[in-house]
Length: 569
Picture (cartoon, rainbow, N blue to C red):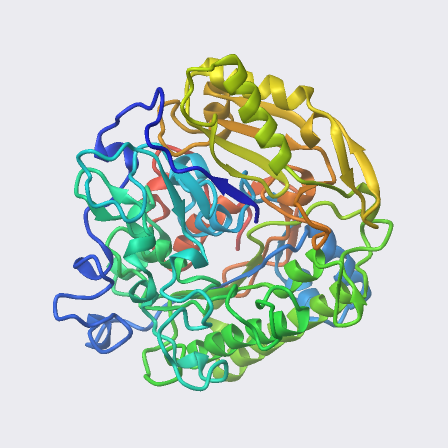
């Protein structure tokens, strides 16, 4: 992802808000702010009260996110492979053919939505790497005199060691030993890489940043076992307000060094599949009633699951393993690399379903399959790669030319994959409107799928929401210190990158970004196809209903109209 930040010495026009406006919880992970309990132990098993007679019976939900997958991919695969695991799920479960993920369609708000029921404007999580006008930069010690405004990078940048698959735990024999990774990855985060709360002058952990509770909070409080597997230790954001709502959180770092020299696990689809396989094995261990490393018997979790990365990387890579990535010219038929990735995911889903059946857990475990996000564009001919760095440099120059008294660039921070999100040093409506007008008047030349020059207009955007309109567009309060000050909706095909190594991205609001599969299969569902429009935020209350808890216990469900998925059995 492309991100550019400028640490401000002062933020013109910034509004100083109370600490409560940042949505920061009081308790840090493990209660002492370092992912440990009061005895200095992590919560990877030995120090958890769940191991002292807590209920392990009842109903269970296995949630799977196939990142990048579209509803159209599911329909194509089922038609081509009628005897596949995906065909079994779709054909014998509740298939929602008109499901949409969040906007922005980044992985972080996408996963948060499925497990909290909250949109980005409600959760306060707009991307994995954002800016907050009311926090202090990482490493701040003089909190009384440091101007507010900080990057919030809940990515591999927050790891102790982002080059290591175990994020710096120090396991010997990696990658084969990765299942020995702690189930409490908050202990692997570097506090010095976290933004600082001006009220307490302490680092803000990911779980403290979340403004709403999660299904893990509700189920853990009910005495039920919880687990999850994802791609960064910063996914401890899902740990909830208490900081320990996930009993077993397995998060090998996907952007670490892979076995292929010079590449992380996303840059080669074969090793992406290898990476996904570790999480599949973790889930199999959990189906069998163990923790993710199969070292301790804890019982099948009430809620558990994982995300797959193989489809996403196969959509984004131009080539890998001697095969072409993405889709064929029609934008529907997967190319060889993507077809193989879909086969891989289908095979692994078959393993999970088989394990549920062999243990008898299929009788009380409902499986939900969806995606954090889709990917755009799907048609190779639509692709326009645009290097946005010169665009933002020109914007800043134009601002300073008009405002010679300005001591800072207008753009304090930006995120731009196949959307453009800008946080501005001047939060006035006039400044936001200036940026909007500049971007919509800017034309230039990018490159196409073959790397050839391709003209673009309006900075690659189709519409721009600025200032108060940006807040309203994202469903956030106008004075929210977290929301982008400008949101640019990309033209179909726009991917912001200075190179030629991507043919698709996500994060934006185009149909291919947001149209994802959603299937509910098992004892909590019935065989049906539902064409009614639904949102992935409805997965969270559905999980609670399926596990026998009240969906209204979710903060996002209270008064926000977030309902259980319709027509369930």
